[in-house]
Amino acid sequence: MTDSYADRLVDEDALRAYLDDELGAVDAFSVARHRAGHSNETLFVTHGDDEYVLRRPPAGETADKAHDVLREYRVMDALQDTPVPLPETVLACEDESVVGAEFFLMRKLDGDVIRDDEPERFATSAHRERLGEELVDSLSAIHDVDPASVGLGEFGHPEGFAERQVERWSQQLMWAFDTTAEEREVEALYDVMAWLQEHAPEEHPHSLVHGDYKLDNVMFAPGTPPELVGVFDWEMATLGDPRTDLGWLLSFWRDPGDEETVADEFFPAFLAHEEYPTRGDLVARWEDATGYEYEHDRFYRALAVYKLAGLGEMFFARHLSGDADDPLYPKMRETVPALAERAQRIIDGDAPL
Image 1 (cartoon, helix red, strand yellow):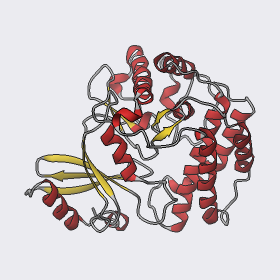
Image 2: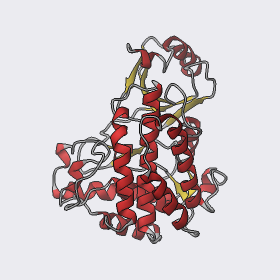
Image 3: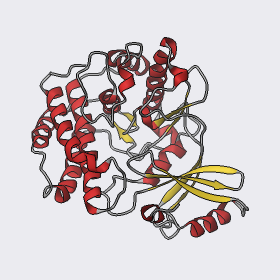
């Protein structure tokens, strides 16, 4: 690694010494930064004949609990023997002196994480339909896990989860506003905040939730038909309301005939192709698989967009503080206000399911 920000992410000599001690000494060693994500940092590590992925928080100050990689490791490790598709966990390190932060290591999977473009091999009617089905089926598998049976019975507090989500993300926004308010204010988010506080469902199902489940947080195997082989980015996982996961997934999905989206960097345009399942199709398959009913749609999708605006504002705060070099972050100056307007349209019923 050569740039100054990347140099803040890892001391390669210290990491090599640590891994040699934990996994055995080797001749070959290298580290490369993966720049596709926008939250926790991902590094590809070659250690001998083995290829790993290292996850650590971003460099610099971050909002409380926003980048908890050891929480991510704990849930992934607990789910290793369940139907949830995951990479193999290897080790977790609490010693911040090794790379400057806590981190964990997992084995590298082969496949594609789909972000901006549709893989050519999936460009058929059957494969487009199957991609949506695989995505929903893996989410349903997460929601079907018995947390107590895998050691996650005390992993969270599902009672009142929806209400706490509004409170938590409002706190994240206020953390970011401390930095961003001098640049510009997003007053519409206060209106969204008030509506969500008033309309949070008092009762909801309880399950394990991923917290950030969407197309670019999963991996599909090489070849066809589409096979989902890995779910990533578990840092927000907890016990809570599974409908928050579904609302989050739906907020990124595009149907044919949707109005022009805001924040195109977050929403893959190719999903609007008529051969992909619609949002309604995804909901129906999830309801059939889990036995849950997807109620309070406006709340869950508005909450999802509110959370996305909160993430964007935290990104913008880190940009202003000089704690990131991600080219996406400065775009949040205009993107977050646009997301606030989108959340309001959902609330007003102008962006139906």
